[in-house]
Image 1 (cartoon, rainbow, N blue to C red):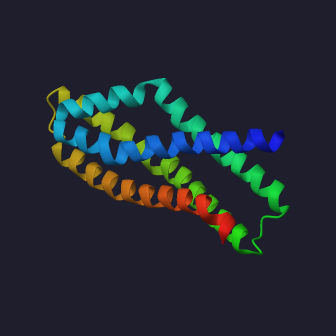
Image 2: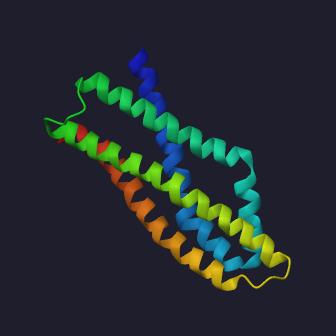
Image 3: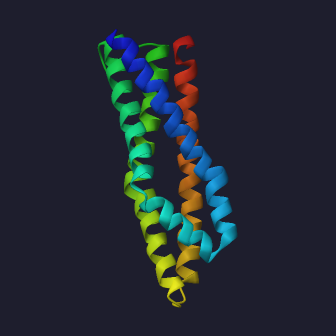
Length: 161
């Protein structure tokens, strides 16, 4: 029963985490960029909503925690010694790196963008700074997308390797 609960946590958490992350990169962020200053205000409002952080953070923690426990349960070791172990290990590593990049880079950039939007709404010229952060967000968004897709694909096929 414990393994079933872990698998459900891992799969549902992963779907929420990957789905909301990919939605942000491919739909939300481009739309916000098109809206200019009003898009920045919207993003600030969205990111300050505690439910957003709870959903993304909770699903990431549920996915990572249950994934680590499942890996240990299935293999009893963390050093890969066969194809499936390598697939799950690399996919898990991609997810962990994604989580660390999100914590260390993406969240602080989002907060910085929100602060700039406030300053811009107050009449201050922040366009150059916003453009710099936007370029960084695109780069790290692309990295995050690659990591997320790698994690999802490897989790889906690892048992067949």
